Image (cartoon, rainbow over all chains, first blue to last red; front, side, top):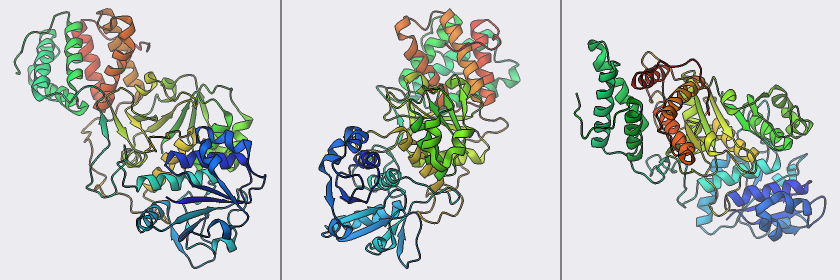
Length: 258
Length: 258
C-alpha cells in the first residue's frame, strides 16, 4: 500500500482533509515531514472527521530523506513538470505502476508539497518520477487534499478488489455497474406483453389510438417507452394498477395483444 | 458543459471548495438551491481562492425543480444506491455519458446534497440516474467538495481536448451510439415535472396513491420509471394524452408537484 508523505504541510486542516481523502480509498499510512504548526494537531483530527485514526497513526520525520528511507519507489506530486528530465505519470498511470510494483513487494510512496509553494526542485529530484493530474491549464489550482484525493481514487480504481462501481480495468471485464434492482427483478417478457394488451385495450376503449392508420406507430412508440424503461416485475404491476385505476376498470385476466 | 447543483449546502466554505474543484476541470456553471447560511457568502468566496469567479456567477434557486427546469438529463450524486430501481453510474461512466449527451446539445446537470444528510429520496427520484464514486466500503465518507472534484476530474479526462496525460479517452467504441431520437428531442425537466403533477393528481383522484404513508415511495417509483425511460418531448405529450384519455379528463394547465 502506498505511503502518503506530506512535506512541510502548513495547515492542520489540510492534513485532516488529506487523511479523510486517503481513508475513502483504503489508504492509511500517512507520514509528515516537519509540519509547520507542530504535531499532534487538534485541527487535523477535527478535519479528518471519521478518519481521525489515520491522523493518530501518522508518523513525523525531520526530513524527506528520513521519511522515504525504506521505500523502493517514490513519486513527487507537483502541479507541472519543472525543468527536469523526469518521467511524468498521471494519477491513473501512477496507480497502475504502483499496483505493479506493489505486487513485487516494493515499498512505494508519494510526496506532496506545502500548500503555498509545492515541492521544491531538490525534493522532486529525490523521487523516481513526477505525478501530475490533468487539470484545466487556465486554472490549475488543486489544493493539497484534492491532489491526495485524486491519487487515492485512481489507486482504488486500479485495484484487484471488486469495485462496487466503475469500469473494470480491461474493456471487456465484468460490468459491475448498471441498474440497481433493489428487491425486485427484471420483468419477464410475458408480463410486459400482458401489460401492453391491458393498456392498449383501455386506450382503444377511450378512443386514444385513433385514427386507425396511425394506431400501429402509436402502439410501437408506447411499447418502446416501456422497453427503454427496463421495467421490473414490480413496475409492470404498478402500471397495471395505474391503468386499472385511471380507467376505473379492474385489469382483465390475460388480454390479447393486437 | 454540465451544471453543478448544490442542494441546500450547509457551509459557505464547502461551496467555495466545490467551486475551486470545478474550475480545475473547466466547469463554471454553479447553481445553489436554498443555501443554509444565505447568499452571497464571504466564506464561499474566500474558500474558492482563485475560483471566486465561479462563486460570483453562481445562481440561487428556491427549489430543485426550479434549478433543473431547463435541463434534459440530471444525475443525483449519492453515497450509495438507495432502495430505488435506478441506473447507477461511476464518475468515469457518468463523464462519458454526459460527453455523449453534450454532443447532442442536451443540457445536463448533477445534483449534490447537503453535507450532513446527502440528497433525500424525493430529490433523487427527480434525477435520471445516480452518480456514485467507488470508495472503500469500510470508510465511505467523501465530503461534498471531494465528490464534486472526482466528477470534474473524470469529466476533463473524458474530454476531446488532447490531455497532456492520462489514458486514451475510452474503449467502448464510437460515441455515436445511444438512443436515436428520430424527429424529437429529449424532454426538458419542466415538461417531465408537469407530467408528474398531472399523472399524480389523477392517481390521487382515483385513489391509487393510497394509503397516505405509502404515497411518497409510490410516487418515487413511478417517477423513476419515467427517468429510466429517457423520455422525449414527444413521449411526454403521449403520456399526457394517455393520462387524460384514461381518466376521461383533459390535462389541466400547469399543475403543481406535491
